[in-house]
Image (cartoon, rainbow, N blue to C red; front, side, top):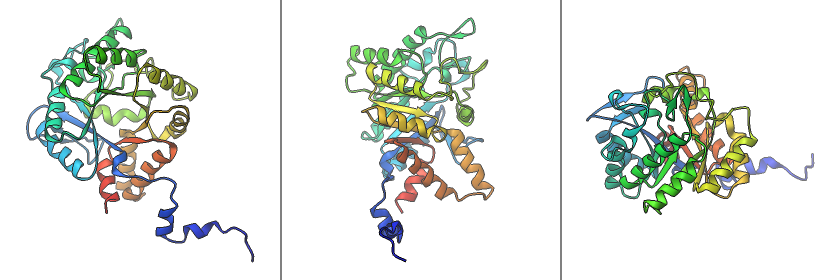
Length: 325
């Protein structure tokens, strides 16, 4: 049998497969979400996210040092606000001595080169669990944006490298950019959650921070998962308003959107491998239905193949260890 072309020649062994691989995954690709709690020596496993923890700041610093030793260069901070500090204004979010602000300073002091990103949204601080201020049962846009600007400037003042607005309010990227510029924070970047969909896959994350909405849902501000072109519109608007990095969230059910966004923009594209996606792999692995290590690497490679330059993932630490073997 004569064949002019035998494609299997380039698959014959691991060395040649690596040599011609179109997509390469490294620890440099990862952003590690960290959940931080008040107190000392606290490490609480999140029931719906086996193997992932909410830690007090002292233990978070130890974790960040280990992540750095594995070659991971970026963390994304989320804090758990005490119930007694929650209200409908979000004012704890810009408390100069708040947990987020103290965490930023401590991490930058411990490892100055670690890129510290911070979540910007009001849901952890809200008595209603929504990403914005509530009036007459409605999440109001413009007053929320004013609060997000205060929050972002406070994070920049504490030393954040990038603020990451995850709220999906209209116009907030431009307002935050203006607020940062006016406050003299010309080196602080913005990673915009530009295409964030209203998804059922966020459940475990809301367990982690006790931030589930107290009424209704988030469909009046997060995107309809049936829409693709809307993601391009939202993303291009965020870039025009001053976003340095754009994000698609969730990840796995939205690989097509990641590719569409990547093809449309000229800034780095990030994707969020979210809590529900993490928990599904953990549950399947626990049942013996798949190999967890292989599933982690294949999943994260799929994000890169789809066009993500950066991947926020709860698997980052495990993946870095696997890649460093």
